[in-house]
Length: 535
Image (cartoon, rainbow, N blue to C red; front, side):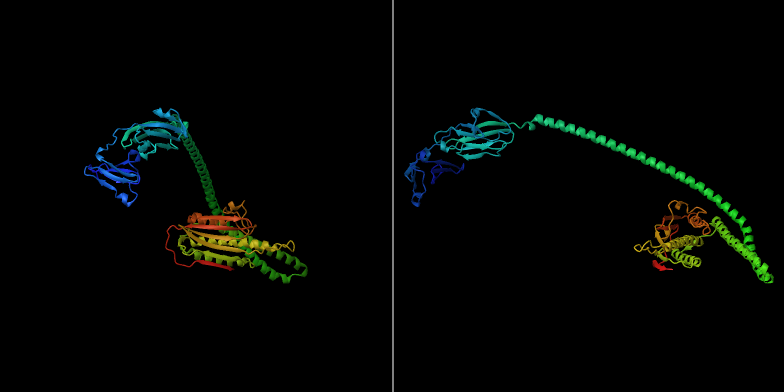
């Protein structure tokens, strides 16, 4: 029903409610407020048991009779009831006198506490309403209805204000309410002086780290400086060694130049008398042969034996003179060739073809001297080797010398292996297969020619002398010692290249000729040459 002041009166199962449509608030009335009962809506008949008189009196039926009253005569209690905090509990234990304080100080682990509070409106205390909040914990007011108790657990250290407000029995709020300050002190390690110590320790740590870093940087710089000094000392030492080596090489070059001039002079001086010796030894052999045929039949038997012995001795002596004369002639020719290098012009040459020709020529020449010689010869000639400007006669001479040396090494090792005997029936000799490999390779602006063999090898103590004139590892009478020296000069001085040697005694030897391609030209298309055959 609507009264004359436009308030709405609503019957419920728990009292009578007045609704203010302007303020949108309810005021509730119960049995204890003078009503006949609390139930106003238990059946259809009771729900219709209401009436408004002409004078504005309202009649409402309840479960215990009916009620009538003039709404204009009902005045709400507008007085503001005081609100007080009646009790403070810590861990569910009452702290006496704490509720009378304005401020309570706790330690960090006293973080479980509760409050009890009350509105001092005694007309109908059950209708008193409450709201509370703990600043820093609750974001807004907590409306607890008629419950006048609030508890908190695990509250962090800090300054917190607990506030509570309440109403009288007619719902008039005391907005000021009551308040108490709760200060929870942090543990000692979270206090300002602890943080001050932390700051000082942090600054000290930064200072220590800075000094350590500075010392490390200084130490690293010192080590770098020392390393640079050591590197510079090594470079100075290397430069000194290079200078000394250059000096020695210059001295050696001067010696070799003088030796070449001396060799050329001696060779020319020896050449003429040597020709006389060779020519007259051959003439003597012819004369001895004629004398032997003409005069032997006319002698008596007593003189014939002595004459025959003398003739044979003269023949042998003449043959030895002729043989060693020819050896001297070969040496002289080598000496002259050694001193005459560099007089022939360079021309474009196909290195692979030159290699194949040199291998065949060397093999047949060596086979002519050693009938029993055989070897497995393999060519690994890289395709597209560019045309190289060289003196073909001289490079052929170098390759013939290197290949002949390889044939000689594998032949000697073959002869040595044939002399080995089986020590007993359980130990068998490993069969040796002589092998010579001729290969070419092009990279960058250089062409490499490699002559490899699995022959006797060169001992470490003499490998540094192989390019010296007149040095040889062959037995007396089988080598002049000028072949590799001439080859070295042809490659290095005549063509600006390199001649290298790698060897291990009993395993084999590798000689490598490196020639520069000073004016590279497009290579002539060809297929890679790889062949292996026993010659």
